Image (cartoon, rainbow, N blue to C red; front, top):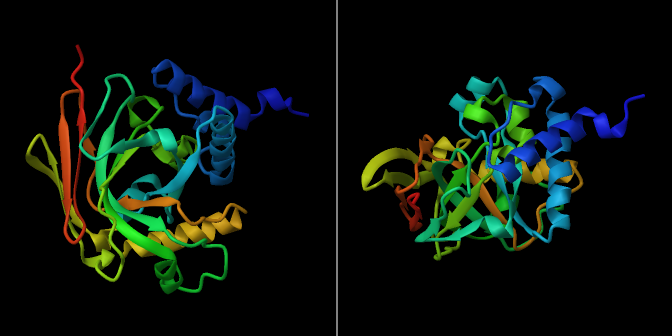
Length: 266
């Protein structure tokens, strides 16, 4: 019988946690978990999330990843993944990220949704999600990987809380009567120059489709989405690498703009 302390889930969780705490990226965890067992990877994610909660951090939402068909093909998967957002991961729009807070940050722009109702009942269509959404906002997700050189498979990124880092949401939150997520157009600028562009339909055909997938998956795992949660629905365009001293801004039509800066190292 395998000692629990030496189980693949425990060892993988420890490896990722040590990387986050030390600021030194680690080797991939697929050597411990295998390259295809996504269920085991979510067990690692949940183990570290449980430790996070004991530290007083509060989960405030979820993030969806792998919503691009191109990225899914790259990692050999046919569905998105998700991770948790905690209260101390939020950066105010126009705010700054201190040097050394992240290991290997990249940014992507997306639509954020704020839930006004629980999503714990029957979910027959995207209309059920639409009815539960209180509003939408422009967002920048700052993704990060505890795995060295972003050498990730689907198992590595799921175990690593879906490569979550920080996130920035615009102050304006608009009802869906004023926003059509499918048709939004996104432009992301790095130091004033266009670095990424895309549109709402690039996210699983409709960002609300991504939320529907998440809501169903969360229900299956016994942890449904709740009123008040923020959901980052997935990238509208390619990720962009950022360095200390960079400034990032994103404009999403119908939703407005959002920005963040990365402090230069002394």
